[in-house]
Each structure stands twice: as C-alpha cells, then as structure tokens.
Image 1 (spheres, helix red, strand yellow):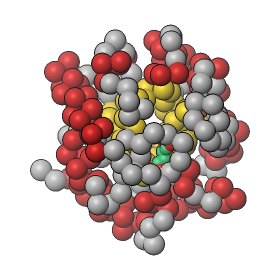
Image 2 (cartoon, rainbow, N blue to C red; image 1 turned 45 degrees about the vertical axis):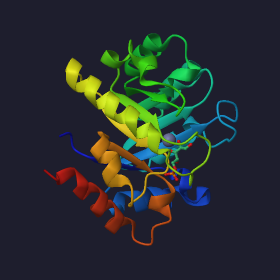
Image 3 (cartoon, rainbow, N blue to C red; image 1 turned 90 degrees about the vertical axis):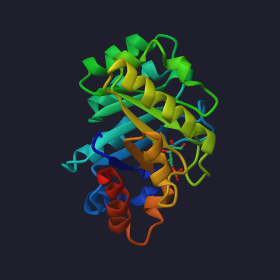
Image 4 (cartoon, protein in one colour; image 1 turned 120 degrees about the horizontal axis):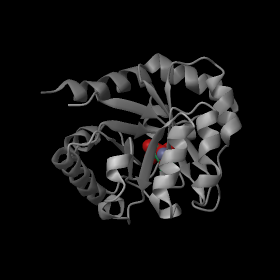
Length: 222
Ligand code: DX5
Ligand code: ZN
C-alpha cells in the first residue's frame, strides 16, 4: 500500500493567521498542506492567489504544498502556483479542454500534476488522462466551502479509480476531498484513497496531533 497522507486544508484555518495554521499542521505530524484556490466563478467563493502560496513557502516549511485550483481557465493560473512553490497543482477536468497540455505545463513548471472531479463527473471523464497524471482528487462534496457532509456514493468512484490504477499498472495517488473526518476516514481509506484532505475536522479538532496520529495509523493496518 502507498504511504497514507493527511493533507489538512487551510480553507478552514484563521486567514488572519495563516503562518500559525502552517505551524499547527507541521506540529500535528501531517506531511501535506492542502491549499484551496477558489475564483468566485468555478465555485461561488473566493480564497487566495499565488502570492499567499509564495509567502507560506517562504516560511521554510517542509510540508508538501498541494494546491487545488477550483477555477475556470486553470491554464491561466496553474503555472504561477507551481512557480510560487506548490509541489503539486491540481485542476478540475470540468474547467479545462486541453488537459494533457496543462499537465505538461504544470510539470514543466516544476510541480506534480493532478486532476480533480466534482461529485457529478464520472471517472470515465479521466480515461484518457490517467496514464499522465500524478494525482487524482475525488471531490466528495460540491466544492465551495468547508464543513459539508461527505457524499457517500462518491466513494464508488474512489474504488473504480483504484481498480483502474491496479489494472493498468499506474502510479497516481488518489486523494479524497470534502467532509472527511475521524468517523469516516477508515471507509475512505478502505475505498482506496491514499491522500485524505481534511479541513474543518482538522482545524476544529481540540487535538489535531492526536487526530493526525489516529488517521495515519489507518495506513499501517494490514
Ligand atoms: C471544498 C474544498 C476542500 C475543503 C474541505 O470546496 O476543496 O478542500 O477545504 O473541507 P472539509 O474537510 O471541511 O470538507
Ligand atoms: Zn480542496
């Protein structure tokens, strides 16, 4: 099994203290930081741009920066996030016509390339792209806000992706994003996820280190 990764999302952090949020994620034992970029068009909410990512990167954190672009025309923005220090840049297949080109541009800019699906998009939309991506992010809520409830039926897509990956001998990671918490993490991992994005469950937790330890322990089960 791939190493299980916890990726706390700063969407649920105090935006007046992002450096504090970064420190809290590092102290918890999580190894990734999920950065939700919203443009007020692809989703009805706005968050931050590449400068925020660059400023966080300048804090010399060892965290893997996982940028999730919920934007229209991701090709206009994605390379800037890679240059700002994102280790992976994920865009939505629903927002991009020439996805292979964008994957190449993200990699040329020095980052791993990911692609994401909203709940209503089937895995088959990625059939031609799977051999070329480093990460597939399955959204288990309609994106826009943290704190929503995970749509259980989306876990079927996680299973399907894990099967396709196995069958084709591919290496992409499978991330699940939206409504993941301590109570459902085991079923998300069981479905085949190896990256768990956690926003409100992480930042609302009174003991995020204990939460991270219990989630990461799911990855060591045999
Ligand atoms: C949702 C974002 C998620 C969000 C997850 O639009 O893409 O990354 O931060 O937050 P929770 O875990 O609270 O659903
Ligand atoms: Zn996200």
